Length: 194
Image (cartoon, rainbow, N blue to C red):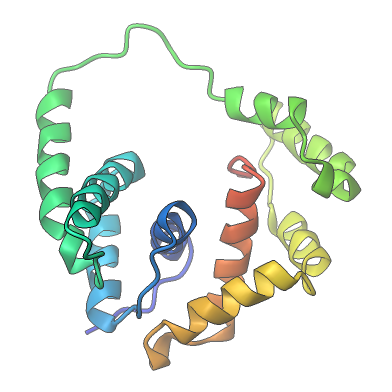
């Protein structure tokens, strides 16, 4: 039975679907079975980098055979193998030095996208609070971003395609909004806002 995901689980699923579309132009109908498989990957907390690497490998093999994948099941074995290798490599490994957890934010602000100039002060204020350790709520930023791109032809076409290729019971407004938001966050490389 398919679960309708909300929050970070659905964000994860949409990012995987968008990765295939944006990187390779691969689009296919997302069945309940596909959705369940993606949801299981999220439940197992398989890192997106492992999944993207698996997708890349399967697509490369498929292109050499001139037959692109038509379902997420085609990626399942590669994801399983790569995830197991990832787990094996990380057993007992320690980080030698702490990573800068705010590097992504600093990079985004330094290379601020011109298309988002209308929101520069909003992002700067939000990230300043985040860097100060304050609890932040990105909902107002999300709403403003979505409202600004409401009539964007490219985004509207991508959203229509996405909904058309979802199983009918998953074609809901909240799911479309998640898709639109994740598309914009990915397109402009906006770091995590909370």
